[in-house]
Structure formats: C-alpha cells, structure tokens
Image (cartoon, rainbow, N blue to C red; front, side):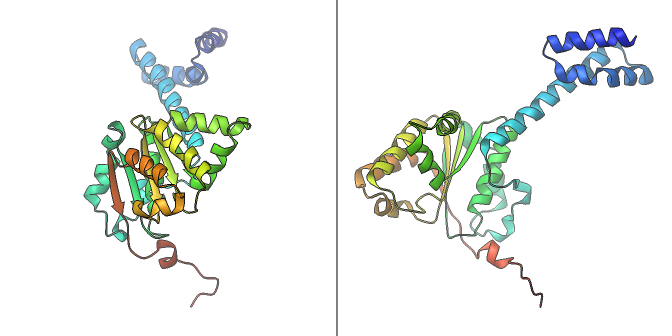
Length: 250
C-alpha cells in the first residue's frame, strides 16, 4: 500500500500538484476513518491543492508589495478619524474603485492615519487577487533614477508598472528638480487608465508646483491623477502622539 501511495505522490508531483502530493497520506487516512466516497476524497484533494496555491500566491504578492508593516483594515482606528465615516471605509474596502481605475489621494498632517489606511486597503486588494506595490516617494525617485543601470531597480519598477494598485507614500515630502519631475510624470503617464494609484501627502495639489519647479509638468501630472479621483482630507490629532509611550510611567 505504501509503495502505491508513493507512486501516486510521484505522479501528482509530475502533474505539478505538489501540495496535494504532500497531503495525500493524511487525506487517505481521513477517507478510511470517515468512509469517504471517491468523489469526496478527490474533492478534498483538489480543494487542498487550490487553497494552498492561493495562500502561497497571497504571500508572494504580499512580499512583492513591500509594505513597511502589516496592518489590516480591521485594525484601523476609524473612530479616531473624523473625516472618514464607517460607511465610507466599507465603500473603499469593496474596491470597486480599483476595478474602475479610480485614484485616491489622502491629504493631512503626519500621524493622522494616511499610510495605515493605504496599507490596509493594499492588503485587502491583495487578498482579493490584485497585485499591489507600496513605495515611499524617496525610494521611488531612487528607483527611477537608477533604472537604466541597476537590475534591482528595473525589476521593482517592472512590477510597479504591472501592478493594478500602486501606493505612493509621502508624495511631495521633498522638492524635485526638473529631471526628477519628468521621470515622475513618465511613470504617472504610464499608469494612467491602467492602474489605480493611492497617494498620501501633507501638501495639497495646488502646492505641488512649488515643489516640482515646473508648472507644465505639474499640470500634466495633476491632469492624469485628478481625472478619476477621490480626495480625502484627513484631520485630527496625530495617532502616534496621542498614544505615545514613555519610559517613565506616571
């Protein structure tokens, strides 16, 4: 019996059903214990293979996303964000805007939850089967400027351009020169009507031209970003300062 099971396991591996091959002995024991029919055994075997593939696919997409930390929407403190209702959060969580290639712009001072909300939506999108990339603006500029001669930058930017949801954190955190602004425009132009973009920034769009140094490029970027967009002004006290921890407890 064991040799025939090994033969079946080898055959499953050749059919690229590696997860089913590994689980087969356990499922056979369960089938004998619970008197499964052949159909029930095959169903359990194929369901296990599919579930394991999906789990690995999600983990692979999470690794590619490069989130700075893992925090789902269930952990997001919506009660501390007065500019966003629970109903609006649920609407964002449904991800219809990704399917329709809408953009989101989260504006507000540091600490009000812009990045955390972006990550939560990104994780939700990955669990729904979307490919997501998270990148801070400083890192994005480095990738764009080194793409021509760095293989690592080429790989990351290829994944970014192929993603269905691109999250750019801390946009306009620092000023750009004309060369950097042009590289950024080329990226936005490529993503336009192909991907959804989430931008977080502490500067409103009407201030971006001051930091880009080129009114024409700024206008072209805004024209594409604001074509289909929801701008959410987030306010309130910094979550980090409100919940800061001290060495000496009072």
